Amino acid sequence: KDSISNLLGTIVKNYHQNLGVSVKIVQLLQHFEHLVSPLSQMLVSIVNKYELNNFVADIIREIGEKDPQDLTIDSSGTKNYSLFITEVSQALPKQVKPSVTTLLPHLNGESQTMRNG
Image (tube, rainbow, N blue to C red; front, top):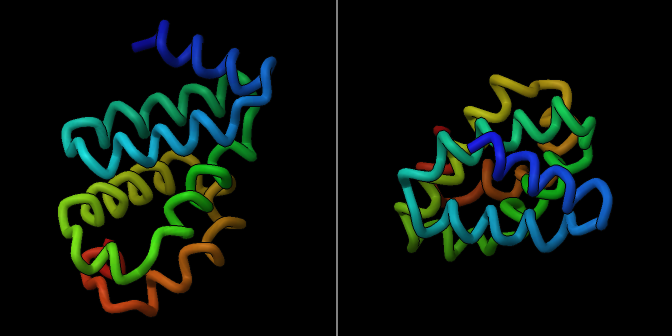
């Protein structure tokens, strides 16, 4: 797990691959419930070790750009996003706080899972 965190941290910091890595993390969250905790721990590790505070905002922006109707239909993916945001916000509240505005459409939307997360 540490090796993957180091690899992704290096890719994001030295090669400016924020977008590609953040999109892939969001895709993994959408499809695999068992990756919520490992990915949130990995994000916390990357942010702390490589001082990539904007990386949290990139991932939350990707989740925030999801269509609210899609989140209503895909309840398992929505649950995964909600759990991920909860875990990351507990570990990195200062980095998550500026990105909350990108989630407002979902907090006012129809998806109860996303609102209650």
